Structure formats: structure tokens, C-alpha cells
Length: 390
Image 1: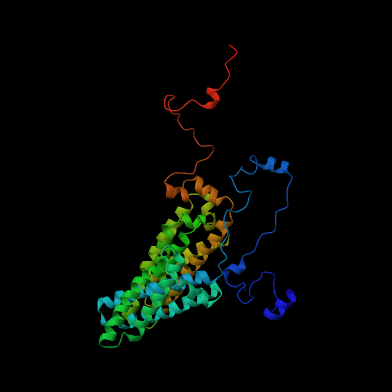
Image 2: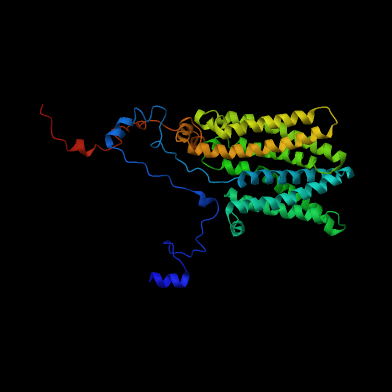
């Protein structure tokens, strides 16, 4: 029978499915199962629990409670490009609403930046998913409760509206007016796209992301404004348009610095939760992101007319924004790998306990007050108890 199936359907790998449909591609193909832990004698477990295993806090046999994500480099790059895309749409709508003719080059370049950024974001997302059809399948349903599904819709609609504005904004008549209206619609979706990465990460159980669910969207949104302003400043948008883009970017840089310190403070309320932002590769990239953003802001505000200074400041701002996203993504992997982070977060009153409004309980449940004897029947054990010898 096996030989017949191999002749008809080709080689069989033991999974009894079509090999063309069962190809392991995308981020899920990177998951690896740990080697099994060597069994230990029972008395070893009794010796280690709780005197040694709980000495520094409870864990689940020293193993992580969560699976770490398997995202590759294309995911933080997708967050960065998507942020530039969304913030560029917002700046284009603001400049368009001002009615200043000197900002027409800025409006056109911002629409084209958003259009190209949408296409590049989709390419990065498809690269992570493994197949283009998987991106298409996410658009077959609309699920408001799924941040990932909403992200696919926001990216698609923002790119379509930005493309319509970039292509037909100079037309006259009904087409031109519709293109102008498309620019404002792209700005609405652009706001969501700029902060989408932070919302997606905050909707997880990873301790360092969950504990900063209020700060992450603000940080991603402000970083998107900083990187979009820096990117448009590098393009030929005229002297007046360059000044507007620089001010837009400086506002984002200042907000990014403030929100990054607020995020670090929120994560560090529990030592084990905030550890990835202070140690390891994620901590190094996190510190580098803050230093780069601060350096870029100082260079932009420096009173000089030298063009190379402003160009260097714009490039450094983009480097800081990209480093921040890689740091946050890497910190999530390190936080999920920590076997004590989730326990410490819950026992400190954060995480799921913050949603319920009460801290996690340690130890046995408190005794409930007994009802009066005249309200509750006498227990059967006492009703049929033999008389006392006395």
C-alpha cells in the first residue's frame, strides 16, 4: 500500500498529508523542542523543593512558563517601516490642511513615502509569514479582537489610500477632490499603523511587554513621528518643507525619550521583568537607542546652517528608532525565557492581577466565616456520632 501511494503521490514523510501543503515555512518552522530533561530520583526533588528551588522565588520546575517568539529580523524592521509609513501620512494630511503652497513638495513626498513604505511593509510581513497567500488569507476575515488581523487591514487600507493620493492629487475635478479626501483617510489609518506595533506587543502575556502595555503604543507612535520627520528631511521637499519636517521629527524625538524612560520605569517595578532592558543584547540595544535619539535631538537643535549636521542628525534618528524596535523585540524573547518573570509579576500585583484589581494570593485560601448553627443543618458526622464515654 505504501509503495502504491508513493507512486501516485510521491514520497511520504509519515504525516499522511500532501507534501506540498505540509511544507514547514515561516516563523513557525523555527520552533525547536528542547531536549528532554534527564529524570532525577524522587528524593532529589524533595531535597530541592522548597528549600532550594524556591530560595529565589517560585518557578515551574525551573522552566519558562511561556514560549518565546520566533520572529526574525523582518518583524522589527516591519514595525519600523510601518511607523514611518503611518507618520508620513499624518504629516502629509496636516501639511495639506494648512493650504500653504510652499508645502506642496512635502505633501507629495510624504504621500509617496507612505505608498512605498506600505509596499515594503507588506513585503517584510510576507517574508516573516513565509508565503504571500498567508497575508491574503488574513484579509479574508475581519476580526476586531485580533490585533494581527486588524494590522493587516490597516496596512492594506493605508497603502491603498496613500497610493491614490500620490497618483491623483494633482488632478483637477472630482478625481483630485477624491484624492485629497484619500489623503485624510490615509492619515486616520496612519495613526493606527504608527502605533500598531506597540499595541500588538502589549496584547501578549510576555511579562516585559504586558507590564508596559500603556507605554508601548505611545513609544512606538512617538518613535514613528521621529523617524518619519527624519526621513522626509532627507528628501527634496524645499527649504520650508524641510523645516516643518525637522520640527515634526524633533517633537517625536522628545516624546520618544520621555516615553522610553516611562517604559523603563514601568518595567523595572519588578526586577526580573525589567531585567532585559538592563542586561544582555537587548539592554545594549535599548541604551544605544536612547543615546542615538538624544544625540540626534541635540544635533537638530544645534544652531548651525551646515547641511551635513542636519543630515547626520536625521540618519542617527532613524538608527535610534530602528534600534529601539530591535531592543523591544529582543527583550520580549529574553523575558519569556526567564522562568521567574511571570511569577514575580503576578505576585507583585501586575499582569493578570492588575486586570482583576487584586494581587495574586500566596499560600492557602483564607477560611470562610461559618454560618450560624441555626441556619445550617448539623453535619451528618456529628448527627450520627456515638455518645461520649462520659
